[in-house]
Length: 228
Image 1 (tube, one colour):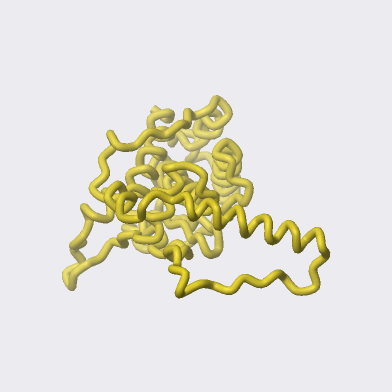
Image 2: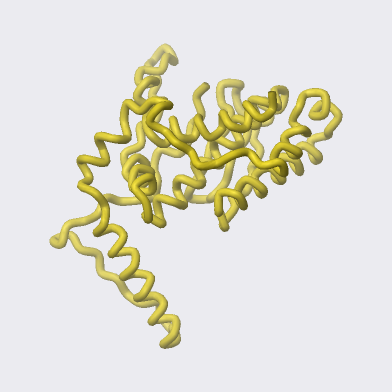
């Protein structure tokens, strides 16, 4: 299944000294605000300086398998209770507003468990059947295709997959762990799915087997397994 996750992360590779960026304090700031601003900038610069060699990180983000991924997350009882509403017999009794409430409840609860403070907003659209969903980091939104509502298990897979992408972007900004660095480098060098003139995907393996996609798929699998 192909999910058209955003190809650009909004990050830029660390610039050299020759291509430095001038940093200015916000206008009309108090001394406390200026002090906090520079403290934040110094902490950010320190984290970036701690990055492992870029080429070494690049070697780790492609041709990744499930065995290379370890996710420290277990589906909680609270989430399992929400997932019960996605079981087909229950899902069919809900109107669209109730379904959207259930979706938002899942996003909010899992966001809390992942430590995502800026929770993504869910946006519904109507697209062709081969589009399931996407995460837009610029707008911090999870876009879901209404046509996917006919298969609630697949919908859960899409929601949690895209929510994991939101988590990856957050962690890539924090840049506190080796995994954060892998997220960041992969998002800076993301491989988007490409199609030829016949509509066939020509780089499906490269797209599907990059670190952030394997990680998102493994994360989503935890929820579909919990629904069985």
